[in-house]
Amino acid sequence: MLETLMNALPRILVGLAVAVALWLIGKGVGALVRRRYLRRERPSFAHVMSRVVSLLATTIGLLSAATIIFPTVKPVDVLGSLGIFSIAVGFAFRDILENLLAGLLLLFRAPFRTGDEIEVADSRGTVVEINLRETVLRTYEGRQVLVPNATVYKNRIVVQTGYGSVRTEVVVGVAYETDLDRARSVAQEALEGVHGVLAEPAPRVLVDELGTSTVDVRLLFWTAPQQATVRVVRDRVLRAALTAFDAAGIEMPADIVVLQGTPSLKAALRGEGREPTPGGGLAAADPAVQGQARP
Image (cartoon, rainbow, N blue to C red; front, side, top):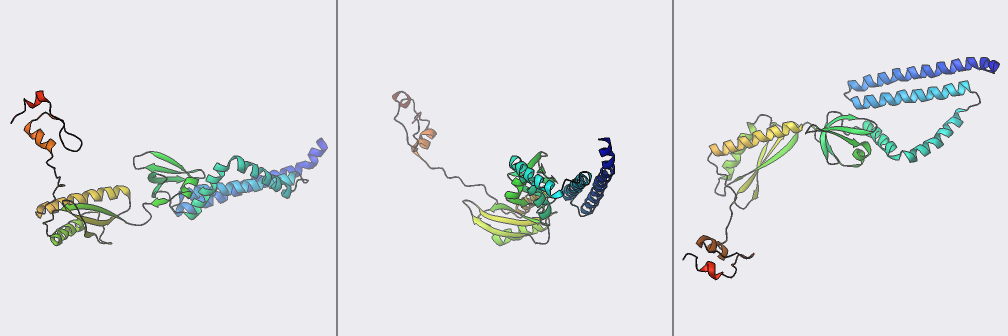
């Protein structure tokens, strides 16, 4: 046994040297990959790919060391055994592997990146990280949400910050007697003076709908895409429109409510103690109460 060990010692040393060398090479290449993609502002991709490169190099190193130390072991046999093992693992950990593959596809396709604001699977927030298991979101309320990558990949994704600007709409109602051309001019001037409303594309004011008591005027404007900016600018637009309409004497009436003079309303006004029916009529009078009713 000692003689066999001494004869195999050079192979063992060479195999270990190869494994360590490939491990170090994997670490170095992983660091280069991380540095390269960090410069491109893709930290999630850099983190995942550096780990994948390091793991691949380590696996190759271990296989090489095994074939050097044990000459009877052939790489083809090892790969065949790994293939059968991987099938069994695939059935046992199907969800995990599905999320892993979806994570790699998301990282390569890059439909969104770290720092983007997205909406997916009833969750909205800022992307904190994309790893091999899930996509980490920070909601606008400050909560952390972990969405499995397979769910993200299969569902509809809305990227709030996908472009440099987004459009927002608000509706204000003016009286039917209002000069609509003047109202549009006042609203347009108010929009153009709001800080945060982009000049290009230019804001627009359109008569939108004839309501019950008002003519609805729709204000359309573009802002930076961040959700916080959209909310703040929308508040400024509403306040500016209300102030401008008030200064110009443009009336913004409340909804008109029509009351039907049913027998029950008349009885209530006269002070009669009779119960109204669901249709607005009156129940049969109580003789005791009827005698006390006012004329």
